[in-house]
Structures are given as C-alpha cells and as structure tokens.
Length: 108
Image 1 (tube, rainbow, N blue to C red):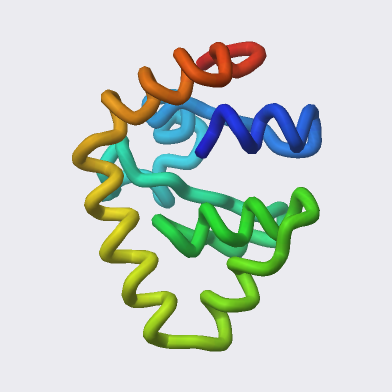
Image 2 (cartoon, rainbow, N blue to C red):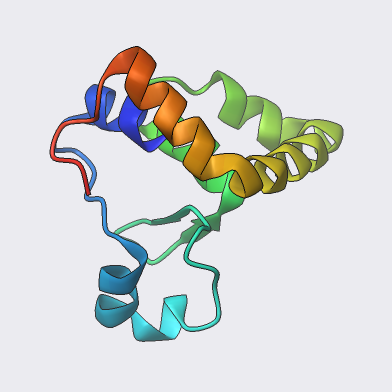
C-alpha cells in the first residue's frame, strides 16, 4: 500500500518507519506492532489497520473504500480480517509489488 500511496500523495503525507515514529510519538506507538499501518492526523485523530489504509486513500482523493468502511459494518470487519492476513505476508507482497511497479520513491 505504502508505495502506491507515496506515488499518488507526493509530499502531502509524511511516512515514518516504526522505530522513528515510536521515538517521535512514544505514547501513541508504545504498545503497537511495528507492522501495523497507522495514520496520525494533525488534529490528533489516530487510525489503525485497514481503517488507516482507507482513510489515507480518501485523503489523497480516493474516498470510495473509506465510505464503504464507514457505512457498512460487514465491510469493515472483512477489511480488518484481510488486513491482518496481509500483515503476515507483507514482506513477500512488498517484494512482488516492487518487482511489478518498481521501488517507491524515497524508499524508507
């Protein structure tokens, strides 16, 4: 997800590795897995997992999945289940995406 979002968002979003985020925001990231995607908005609102992915996509101009997530509980449950499944295979999937699309700019 991150590579595709970086390509679309440019400089509108700041990406941090888990260790860097934990240093900058120790109260927020203290008990979370380093593989969890998180979105922290300037107003302090925090999103995790599939919710963070869909909200990020909405912020860069693709709100369809975010709207589904907010309005259909079954879609939110399925999304979070799928997100947990993807986290297990994230290293493999990232490699495949990089091979297909090329590495993201300014790779973390």
